[in-house]
Length: 213
Image 1: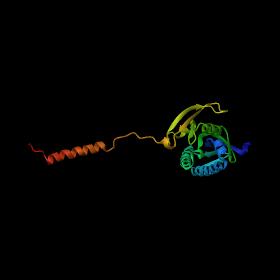
Image 2: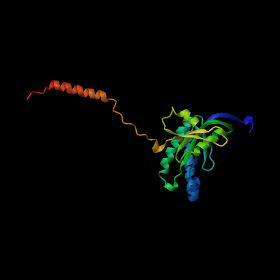
Image 3: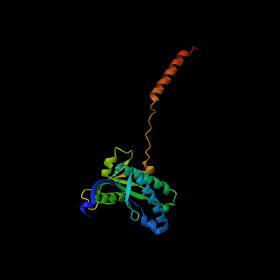
Image 4: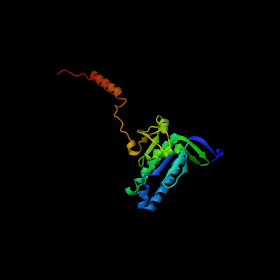
């Protein structure tokens, strides 16, 4: 890699892989490969929809980058929602759930490939996600916490191989667990409505005064 052939840039990195991929392959290679191919095509379409690009996709892994961290997170949420719907149509032992990790970091780009600690961190964060889930690094959280109406759970700090400082990790709540029951609130028009009822009762009493027995 020569100095003229690469450049540095800050980018949002999405890393994904299949939970239990070896088990799926061991039980039914043909069905697993068909499902993986279909899901990867869907993920690629959604990545492009959110203005990202697939950098690499070896085996059951997928690596993508986005100029916008907000786009990366929105894409990840939509991917998991779409895959959840598709998995519901499959037998439980055939379902393919992806784990997704997102990091915002510095990378080195050479032609169409990217390298660097930013990718290593994204992969480490992905490994902390559950199947069907999304984990994000602290740099991603700091960038989106006030921009997207999502819920997060801190998983604390984690070490990453060859990275000096520990990495803050957050788990995003997606799917059914993302639904939060709203607290019951009185109807905003309640005070005004109560006033109107009182006014009506008062004037009816004037129009139809009660007569003594």
